[in-house]
Amino acid sequence: MVKSYRPGGVGMLPAAPGTYLVHAYFDDNQVELIKANIIGWQIGAERGLTPLVIDPRAAEDDSWNVIHPDGRVEAVDGHVWENVDLWIDELRRMRRAVA
Image (tube, rainbow, N blue to C red; front, side, top):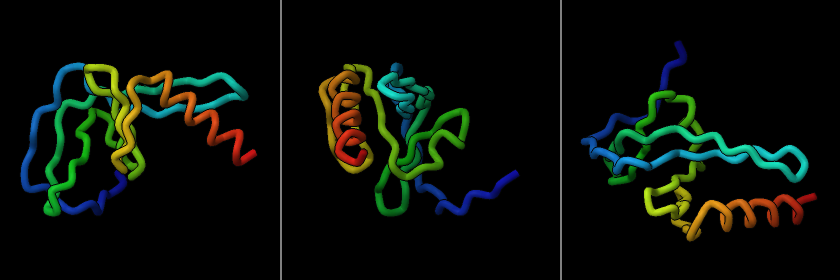
């Protein structure tokens, strides 16, 4: 088992039902969304939140995105999109700009 060296939390909060950690994977112009149910939030010593999911590998990356029950997508850096479609559109634009 791989050890995690993330600092321990100072508390936990339950997540609202319908809250998901989401990753988008592109194959040409097709996109596949992989969602993991967030069951809680770990509160870090610096008051940051880390999603608690069943598969800990889903939250290994520090650049995660969350789908909230109202459909908003929020990035760990504070960017917010009104819905998944707008988030995916921006990801597509960024991919085209790099290519």
